Amino acid sequence: MEKNTTVNSLGNSELERLFSDITTTENGDIAYKSTGDKMIDILFTTDYLGEHLEEVPNLGTSEEQKLFAMFIRDPRLGLGRRDLGRTMLYNAGASFDQIQFAGRADDIWASPLMHADEDQFYAFVDEIKHRIDSNDEFKELYKKWLPRYSSKNLMVAREIAHHWGMNKQQYGHYIKCDRTVEQLMSRKRFEDIVFEHVPSLAALKYSKAFAKQQPERYNEYLEKLRSGEATLHIGTANCYDIYRNKNIDQELFFSKYLERLNLTGSWIPIVDTSGSMINKYDSIGKALSIGYTLSRTSTYAKNEFLTFSEWPELIKVEGNFSNDMNFMSRANWNNSTNLSAVMDLLRDLKNDFPEWLVILSDMQFNVGSRQSTKELMRYFKYIGAPTKIVWWNFRCNTAPEKTDDGNIFLSGYSPELLSYLQCGFDGKKFLKILLSNYKEVYESYNKLS
Image (cartoon, rainbow, N blue to C red):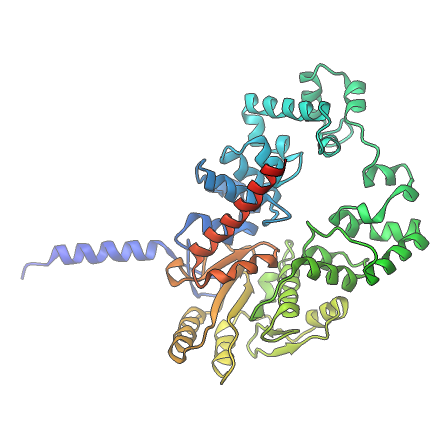
C-alpha cells in the first residue's frame, strides 16, 4: 500500500514546530521557551537577562521600544533594572533626555555599548558639560555621577577630561560637588545632613551611620516621621531594599513605603522557597518581600499568604515587617515546588475566591504542576469564579504558560506593577496599558521641563 507521505509530512512538521518551543523545568514539568511575545519575554525574565546581557533581544528603535527600554531602567516608575535597562536603551537608540529621565546621569556614559559608538559617546558627554555650564537643575547630579580619577572608572575619567581639554586637577575641580550625602559623610560633616532631603536608597543605606553619628538628631527625625511631621524620600526604594537593610526600623520604613505604594487588590500570594530559590541572587528574599507586601495590601486575605510545599497552608502574619519576615523564613516550607498541591488546596475553597493568584517562583515546578494548574483554571471558569494567575518570575528564562492563555507575566521587585491589573486577564493588554501610562507621565514631564 502506498504511504500517505503528505499527511506524515504535515504531522511531523507540526510536531517539530510544537516541540521546538517546549522544554522542561529542573523538576521535569513542561515549560515553554517563550511566552510568544518578545517584549513580554523580557518583562518576565529581567532577573535572568540582567546576568546574561549577551542574550538580550534587540527589539528595534521604534518609540514604543524606546519607552519599553525606559520602563525597564526606571527605578521610580518601572522595574529599575540598571544594566539590562542601559543595554536596552542603547539598543533602542534612546535620546539623551530619555536616558536621563529613566535613570541616572552615569547611564549616559557607563555602558560599553555607548563606548562602541564614539560619536554618540562624545555627543552625550558634551551635552552633560553643556547642561552643567548652563546651571541645569540636575547639574549637581551630573557632577556626582561623572567618573572619578580615584575610582574604577579611571580610564573613562581620563577620556572625558582629555576630550574637554582638562588635566586631572581641572577635571576634579570641575566635577566637585559638596552637598551630596556621601560628600558630607566623607568630610565628617554629619551635622549638615538634612535627613528629610536624603534620597531613598541612601536613607536606607546610611541609617545606621546617621544613628551612630547623630543619635539625638536622627532619633528626633524618626519620631517626627512616625507622627507624620517629617517626610521620607522613598520614591526609588522597594520592599526588597527594605528587606535587606536590617539596621533600620523596617516597619517604619515599610509603612511609609506602603503609603507611597497606595496599592490594594483581591489577591493571595503563593511564595516559592524551594532549594532552587536559595542562591547568590537571593531569589528567596525577593519572593518573600514581594509576597509579604501583597499580603499586607490584599483585600481578599489581609496579612495571609500560601506556602508553596507538599502540604501548603494559609499562613497568618501579624503585620510587623521584621517579626513577620523572621516568622516567614522559619515556616515549614518542605523545600518543594509542588504547585499541584497548592492548586488542589485552592480547589477546595467553596464560596469565596480571590481575583488573582500571584505565584512568586523561579518556575521550576514539579512534574504535573502545569496540568494541575490548567485543571484548576478550567474549574474556576466552570463555576464562574473570577480567579486569574499572575506569574512572577525569579531567575528562570522559560515560561510555564503562553500569552494565548491570557496570563500576566512579571519579574523584578516592584509590586506597584499590580496596579495595572484592571486591564483584565490579558498579558499583551497589560503591557500596552503599562507603557501607555508610562508614556503619559514622560510626556507630562517634558511639557513641564
